[in-house]
Image: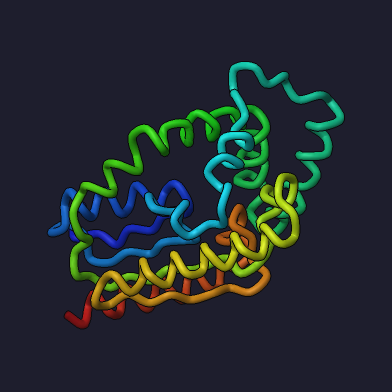
Length: 207
């Protein structure tokens, strides 16, 4: 189908959406960024965040396989999270997460070495409608490594970073979703995602 396209991306996917928009601005009608990261994220996080980030990164090659107990616990948690999804889709997604969990670790390994520089030097985003959704709840992964004070500072920094990113384009808007987590914002608040998509489509058609 020929463009222009409305691009939606969550976390790492938001990097890909922004990079596509930098490379092919004429093919983009709008952008929906779901709790995105940013190439200058450490400028917005508390002191020591870059060092902590390195300690938080696991090595996919040295991590042991999940035990039977871990698999059962994760399967139950994921099934509960996706309870409203159709049976076949839910089961396929759960099994994918349980068997290919190392993939996401490989996908994020080159943030500092490649992706950040590509975005930083890639030029501005096109003048298209942009909506950014910020997860307003706690990041459960951070909670394993940060104190409460560090968590508050990190979330405040992410919020400031998102405000700046949305303000970097003429038609940018940020919406915060209280209680939603970074990892599952799109599953916990599908209503907000659909509302944003409808608003972007209406704005794109109005041009």
